[in-house]
Image 1: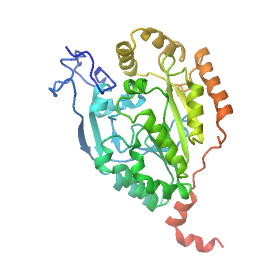
Image 2: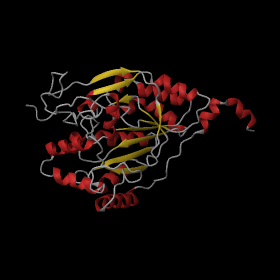
Image 3: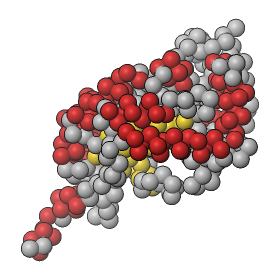
Image 4: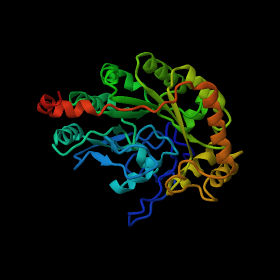
Length: 354
C-alpha cells in the first residue's frame, strides 16, 4: 500500500462537490486512470478560454485584474487557496489540482484583443491571481513570455507573482518593462528552511534559488516585493526576523505577509498532509491555525481572512512590523505607469496636449 506520494503536496483527492459520485481516498484507488501510482504523471489539457482578464472583486487583495494562463499548478503547494477553483473545471482540489493542468492556448490572443479594445482603461493586471505563471509547463509553452511581449507592445502595466526561477528566462522583457515603471515582481518566500519547503511546496524552486532570484532581479533594477505567505503557526513562524533581514539584505523593496487559511477541501488536504509529515505536532498546528480564525481553520470575511485574529495572529503581525522597522529601508508602495498605454493607444490626442 502506498503511504506517501513523493514529489506531490496533496496526498488525497477529495470528491469534487459538484460530482454525483464520491471518490475514494484509498491510495490504491486514487489514480484509477494512472497505473504509476507512486509517481503520478502530470497531464496537460489544451483549452480555449472564453475570456482571460478577470476582474478582482475582493477589496482586500490590492489589485483590480488578474490573468491566469494555466488552471491547476504542478508546484503542488499543499496550502494553496486556488485548489478549490479546480472544482469548477470538473476536477478535485487534491492531487488533481497538481497533476491535471489546463493550458489556455488562446490566452495571448485574448489579452491582445482586450488591450486593443477602445473601452479598456489601463490598470495593472496580475500574472497570476491563482496559479503560478512560471510553473514547469511554461518552459515549453512560453505562454507567459508571449503575454509579456503583448504587455510591452502596448506599454501596459503588469505584475507577476512566482516561486520559480524560470522567470529569469524573460529578464530582457522584465528590464524593458521596469525601465518604464510597468512591472513589479513578487516572489513568494515564507521560510528559510528548505526541508520544510520541499514538503510544503514540493515542485517549486528551492529557497536558495529563490533568494538568488531576488538578488538578481533587484540588481537589475526590477522592483521586487516578497510575499511571505502563508505564515503557518507551528511550522514557519519561528524565523520571521531572520527571514525579513535576509530578504531586505538581498534587495527586497517591500515585504508582505499573510496567515494561513484553509477553506473548503484545503482543511482535509492540509490536515492529512501535516499528520503524515509532522505527526508529533500535527494536532497542535491545526489548533493554532483554528485560533487564527475564531475556532475555524479558514475565513472568507474580507479584511480578516488573510490577517486572522487572536493572540497568535497578533504576535505574527508584531514580529513583521518590528522586523521591517529594523531591516527594511524602502517600504514605499510601487506606483505603476498607466499613461504610456493611453499615449500609445491614442497618439493623435497628444497633438492637443501642448
